[in-house]
Image (cartoon, helix red, strand yellow):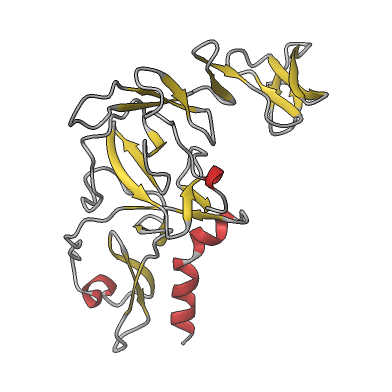
Length: 267
């Protein structure tokens, strides 16, 4: 019984580390072809004690000679078994190690990382080495579009992000729930799907501005933000009435700005 409890705690480690209310990890859409284990559980244990990865998605707990190992599948929010740390994790293994994730050649990766689906807010893409892998949220959840795999509760229609490309063919549009993402909405042709190419602002704390058609720094809360261009500068964000405003400040004495410490420090 203790062994089962320990294994459950290991499998649940990643989900517990999230610690964000109303946020849940989405998962990559898995192939219909299961991953075959390289060895049997007994061969994996070989007289060893403790957790071992059975394959890319299974955890094996070795409990001693003569006792069958406990085998548990990694959960949806942490679907991969990390061999180095022997825990289930949300981070996928190196490319080629597990080939069960469903690729999507119809989606164009403009950079690596996570992207919202162009038309379905319950799905997302993870681009690894410029190859797109389809992901999805569990029932009742929508993709958070925060640059991770996180999904959030779909409480209202506004929670469900969109580029609204059908209304703006031939235009560039920001994502409704997070304008760090923006998309070129292709023209609509008869009997063809509208082509939507999604981009994201790569510099920290920058968001797509429709008026300038470019990514610019933008305040989202009262705090100091590091300047991604020059570490000797920082942005002082505050509200003036109902509007967000900022000033660009300089660290004196040759110091650089440390955003975690919210102060200028000596390098």
